[in-house]
Image (cartoon, rainbow, N blue to C red; front, side):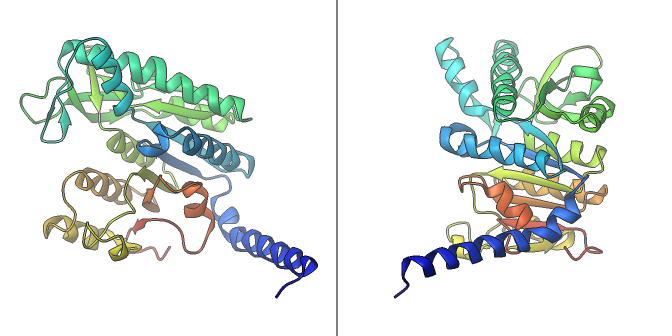
Length: 297
């Protein structure tokens, strides 16, 4: 049985091992851009939210350049209900008619985005809030499915405004609302925006914080987590139905970002405290990391 001094020595040794394990990752990511898609339980739970904010600020303090892309589905639903508009979904997509689009833009751009900016600033970072309309960052086009209204896809990205902010030491916080050539606003899947933005920024890493453990061979069994796979394996899992439902757009956006030069993309469980730091700075990582075949990350 350990006495008090032995406990202290063991605790100190553990801290040293953690720091030593983090060193190669600190070296790898210093000066690099990491795009983080933030949503799900990590956004709804105030304790988890505080930890994500601290993690983002920590990244800036060690020389990493985080860019945050966020959704905000639950808060959109809350405000739709307050305004007497019933939330509707079709094939997993929010049906976004004109009144709903007004609420989506109000909530994502006016409330969620500014709250995250404020929290990062309070935690010691320097954040700036944007949406796809700012600086013509994202041009949208209609999503292909009929009957879903103003649900969009990314048509093009001009990342100059984000690059300028990152180079000046700011944390860009981006909501997934954009407009088409005619100025019509569209609601775009935040995972998709994060993946396309990571590619446009030539990011070192993309991290999607989600409400699942990662990619599972059996979606009912967390023990079947696939910790690492390459693009070809990820595409095969979609084709054979292992990846289904809401995981398809997440895996697809990871694959697209990798095909455009992002070094690695991870789908991580945002319900676990400090998932972002555990993924970036530990050997075991978090969730499922997808890499391009030529890389051995």
